[in-house]
Image (tube, rainbow, N blue to C red; front, side, top):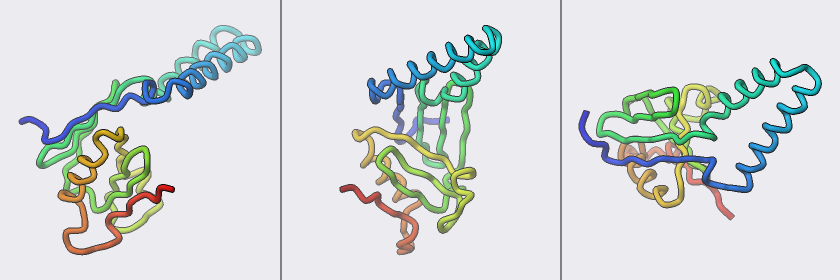
Length: 149
């Protein structure tokens, strides 16, 4: 297995406390509303479905960059992709989308992987991605920096 060259953990629940309180309050409000209309069984089922669908928000995600692959671990999943799979990447203020396509495609949201990061690892992640995927051949379309105001 070896040691990763770069690794970090992102936990969106801890990133912004006000947003986290809002999400939890909305989840509770929705379940109370469903309980009052449909009863306790559907309220419990609704809570479980909503909580599990938001698991990437409530639980940490671990990212590891190895020389030959990327590994992403969540509470319920672990998936690995070879660096050869990715052809381009696109940066936003919350993370970076790794795409298996040379140029823009509507399928990249489904076939690609979005890596969340904090500001403290942003530069290291982008530099690593430039080395592994970046515009080594001078292809300007492979890397697009976000436009911050």
